[in-house]
Amino acid sequence: MRIGIDFDNTIACYDGVFHRAAVERGLIEEKLGTDKNTVRNYLREIGKEDDWTELQGYVYGARMDLVAVYEGFLSFVKQARQLDHDLVIISHKTRKPFMGPPYDLHDAARSFLEAQNVVSPEHVPNVFFELTLDEKVARIRSEGCDIFIDDLPELLGHQQFPRQVRGLLFDPADHFPGGVANGVTYEVHPDWKSISQTLLG
Image (cartoon, rainbow, N blue to C red; front, side, top):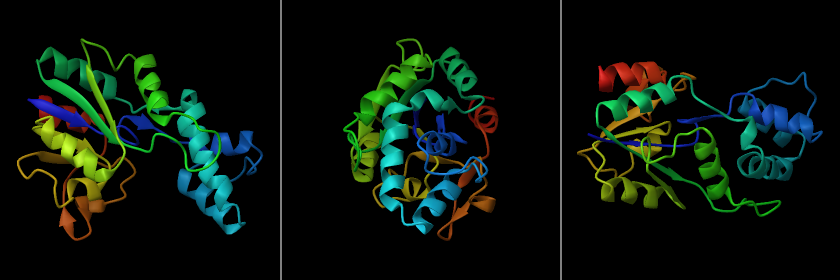
């Protein structure tokens, strides 16, 4: 079985990261709520949309050291490889931020995966960072994935998403109760333990 996995918010967990980075840069007070949407909405409300855009580039490019992998993911990788399943990471993101210093966001993400010992010949040998959602879907098809795990229903519901691929929606924050998004019901999982039990037994 060939299992494709998204990167941002599927492997990489940003809980509290944008809050911490915004406090470091003096954009918010520490007492503000710690989730990403709270930070984003606050900066937009006070007319600092550009600061929010630059903050994203700062996190994804320079502060991946603040980021963790989701609990249970490394165990999933180990178990999947023991069962001889092939793993491939396929994500989409711009190579450079829209604003601020020109960090290489692909290199930063790859370095994060290497530091976590995710990318290696014995674990996940192949990682692809595509520039657009359409290119990501095309890569899922060309890589021959049997399963793809992503946090975005717009990816799993994409018009060109291969129908033969079993899509799993990773939703730890319960953004899509019942697995329903845009009127479509998905196979939804709240954590990597659930995914492991479903796919690996």
